[in-house]
Length: 224
Image 1 (cartoon, one colour):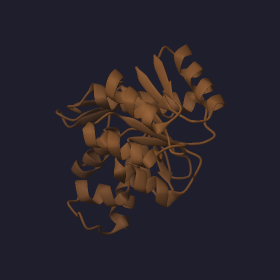
Image 2: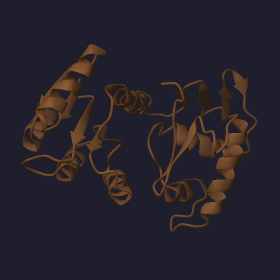
Image 3: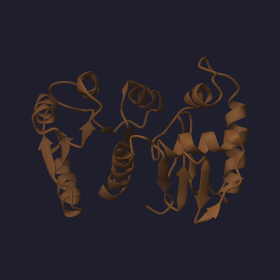
């Protein structure tokens, strides 16, 4: 079951109808306080949260939800502002979509978030035809094994565990290279370039690895 918090009635009805037609049970709320009550009472699988609410800000509601648990949250916003997006991801949002968006786009993000919740151990990760077995430290693309170095595999597994979610190069450096205070972005860029080559793509014609300029990178299903 999903909770959709959106004050615009037209958008609320359209998104709820689209997700319902795709097999989801959706409960809606027009205000932040109503949304919080739904979360506390209904224990949903995920929440879709609009930032522009009439009573409390979506950012404040996100903080409240994060204070009581790890409910997956996808933020919707009309502001395509890189600094704001980074702040929201750092505050605990699992992903975001910028308005206007299609229900198909939203559902693809939702599926990715719910996949991560369904496999909390993160041992088997699938994104499109890409499969990463963390325990076996192996990866295949369309059934064909990928020949990866240790760092290439760790980078791919890290991105796959956060499929469809933008991660910053700072986070990658801290996690993969143990540089919590930042370091040379060039290190990440080079390894991304090597990964792209082995995934059969290039920076000019990306498929799985997408750059969100000024924010970070994400691994996506090229054919959702």
